[in-house]
Length: 292
Image 1 (spheres, rainbow, N blue to C red):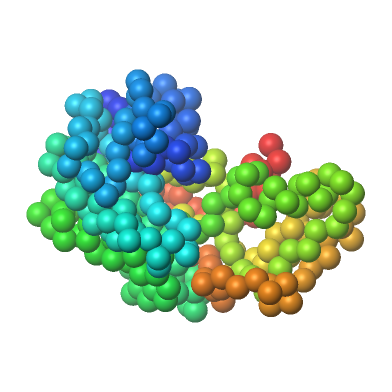
Image 2: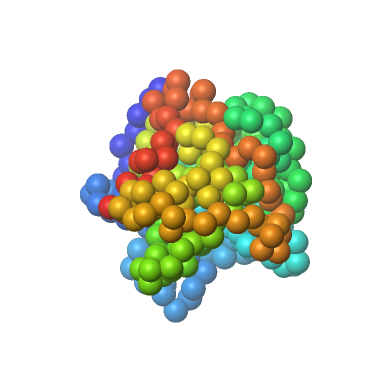
C-alpha cells in the first residue's frame, strides 16, 4: 500500500452531511480543502460551484490530488421522480471522475449498502449486487459507470459503500431529543434494522482511504444489525435516563413505509480491514460520538 501526502483535497458535495464533516476533518488536520456546492449564493474562496448534471464547466484547482465524491440526489422518492436523478447520481459522477483522473486526481466515490438489497447478512466487498429500488439501482449503476469511464485508468479510483451515517441532526434523533428533553417517552421502531455509524468515524475513515490511494471496493459499516428500538435503548441508557422512556412500536403500526426495509444492513469489511486497518464501528462508539 502506497501512502500519499495530499497537496489539497476536493470534496464534491461539501454541503452534505458526510461531505461537510470530511472537509472539516481535513481542515482540522491542516490540509487545504476545496469543496463544491450547487448553491451559487455561497460560492467563493475555496467553495466552488459544481452541478453534477453539468460537469463540463467545472475547473479543478491544480493543487488537488484527491477528490471525495459525496454529492448525490439522496431522497429515495426523488430518485424515482426527479428527471435529473440519473445525471446527478450516475452519469455526472462518472464523467467528473474521468476528467479528474486525467489530471492525476485519485477519486473516492461514495456508494451505499443498499446495492446489496438487504436480504443477505454481512456482504463483503466483492459480493454480487442486487439493488431493489431506484436509489439503490442508481448507486449500482454509478459504480458500473465509473468502471466504464475509468476502464483505461482503473488505479485512479475506489468505491466506498456506507451503511447509515448518524449525526444529532439526522432523523429521528432531533425528534427523540425534543421528546426526551420534555420528559416524554420516545417510540422507536422495532421492525426497522440499520447499522449506524457516526459522521466522525466516516470522515476519519475516508481520510485514511483517500490517503492510501488503493483502488477497488471498500466498506464502512456499523458493527452489527440493530433495530431502531435497540439503538434507542442504548442511547437512553448512555444519556442516564430511565429505560422506560423508550416505548417501542413498529413501522407497520405507525403506518410508515420506506422503500428500503432490509433484513440485514451491516456490511462485512474483510478487504477494508486487511488492507487499510479500518474495522466496523461498535454501537457504543457511535453513541459516544453522538453525545460527545
